[in-house]
Length: 143
Image (cartoon, rainbow, N blue to C red; front, side, top):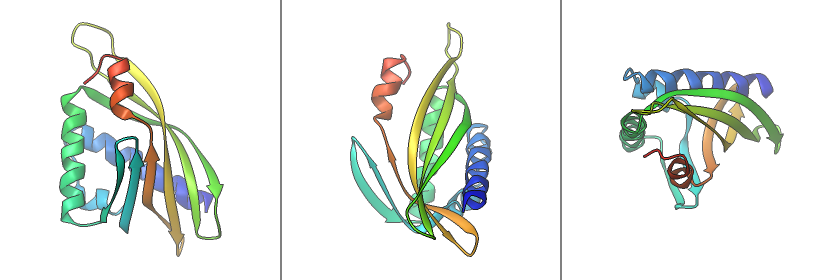
């Protein structure tokens, strides 16, 4: 399970970086996710299908990250909490780097907790839980 999840998040980081550079392949991004997904944050809980609507929302999300000056997303660490033979929570530590107009770049560390399913050796995200991203960005004067 660890190898499959490591491979998943290495791809996740690579695809996120491509998207920040304006070279997103939304079909490839969609392969990171299971057929159905859930997400929770202080803004609420949502669920949806891995379909064209998800690709559209992810593309808009990447556009937003570029618009607020996100330059880079770096994977710092992945820690697993196994649930059973096919499922785990991947506690993923990220560092985001933001370009600032008249100031040095700002780096922000944050964690996201991904629900991951591993079937036939392939890991896919089926959900995530994150903190209040908007409050964190505001605290650092970004957005």
